[in-house]
Image 1 (cartoon, one colour):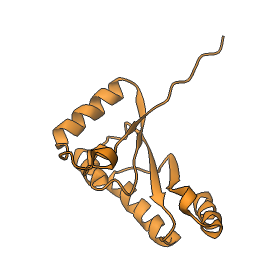
Image 2 (cartoon, helix red, strand yellow):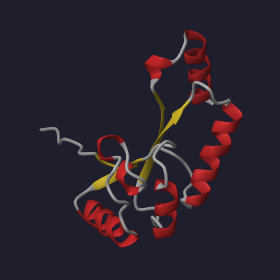
Image 3 (tube, one colour):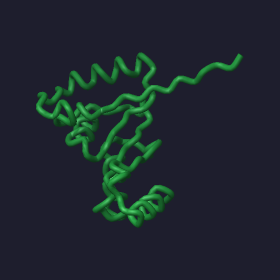
Length: 127
């Protein structure tokens, strides 16, 4: 009998300034975030979901330190950004998090991109 592989990801939008539905909620303290990360790790979470639009998340996580316990996935807004500026931002995020790579990089708001931007975005991701 085949065994199921379980992969859990924790969304980190609330680890910075309020985001989405919770935009007006107070920012979590470093201690609260660290406790959530410890519980998540203990419960089998393997990956953290980040995004460049999650204001303050990278800063807060870098201050706590992740100890390479988690894989990292992120999302970028591609439409009005150059590939060079996105690469620089991703490199900066990795450096701040003391990480070597993102396991996944997704493009936010794909449906808002023109056909040309999508082609360019796919080339960017392939690199």
